[in-house]
Image 1 (cartoon, one colour):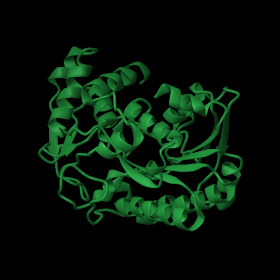
Image 2 (image 1 turned 90 degrees about the horizontal axis):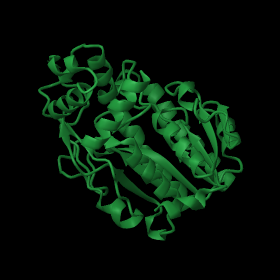
Image 3 (image 1 turned 90 degrees about the vertical axis):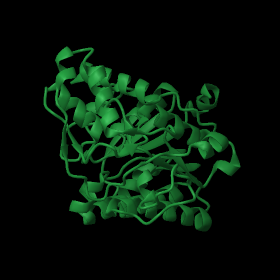
Length: 330
């Protein structure tokens, strides 16, 4: 696999949302592989601090701009070999509170990037899709070709992305791959703000000796996916030479699920290694969130078969690494 990734040396890769959680991790890895990386970000949710370790790299270029502006997208895409499109407004609750902005960024911005990719004649356009696309489908595990009706504006935007990507391949010959992310977590994920993901939010609360609040009774479960698995999937997607793997969508997960009670216990257990008092912090419960699905579990057989995906980080190892990073960096 490492040998496959070495072909990225000298290649030009645009990472939209490159100052965000996932984008910054992708940018770092690509630079280590010898790629020339351009980051496009408007810092709405990304942070300049995420680029501290790479901003001085001569192979790194930062464009501060918004994907809602077509000319900015075209400027960023010009001369690129590949595009890893990570820029989006995430969060189901955010989209419910402000569906118009989520639509503008996630659909209009996505369409701008597809047009820019087409015009720049990039080799491949890989984009962040979402497990929210499965909507009200109750079947487990989630298999790529069986989805339900969306349960939030965010879910609608991510499904529309898949439809647009398919149309651009059929009408313009632009090769795309969509990666349906399942609850990604890990280093550099922002623990602050109203829409912080559950793992970094709970970690920072426990570090402050505050009681985390679980939505519902804690039996809702997720396929929590450590960032290094996601980086691997993105690299596989832009380097695969398997023609059958192109113009597809893939679950990006580990194929296992953990409920919120189990997750909180795991976080407390790992944090208690640094601060023993955390083991005794009480966990509280609140109402279920609107738009949340009860359970999420991915089948990763398609990714294994067509891309050679081999996730190395299960939940235990991922949480251990994430907690270590937060403890040393916050």
